Length: 173
Image 1 (cartoon, rainbow, N blue to C red):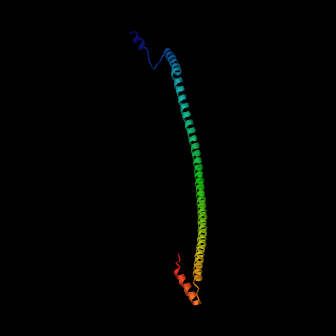
Image 2 (spheres, rainbow, N blue to C red; image 1 turned 90 degrees about the vertical axis):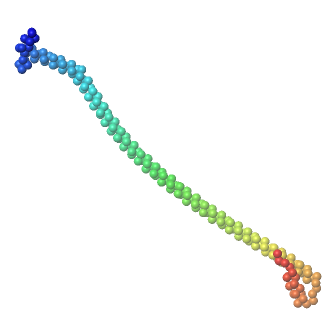
Image 3 (spheres, rainbow, N blue to C red; image 1 turned 30 degrees about the vertical axis):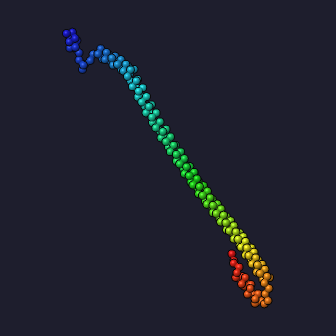
């Protein structure tokens, strides 16, 4: 009941000096405690979050810059590779042309050598054939002369007839 009596005189609309004093003390104490235990960690957490976000943004910028550098470097490497490929293809074409030219020259030289050898062989065969023909003609002439000398003929007509007969008898091999 005492509480009721005390509370009967109490009005929130018209506060006492003691109520204002105690409310202010509690409010300041509450504010200090909240500030010390809540606002500090919250502020530190917000600062840490801000730092994390800024770090992530910086890292993203660095990654973007690095990607741009890598892309430029890749383009440069690709351009160098294309130039190197073109140089290799040109060199291969030059080597191919040189090899074809050398092969043609070698084939031409070989053909010339074969033709020269063939001409020499034909010339040698021709000379050998002429020597053989001369030998055979000489042998025939000697044989005919031998047979003519064995048979003494009186007239030229007999002599020509006998020579023609001997020529017909000799077989040409």
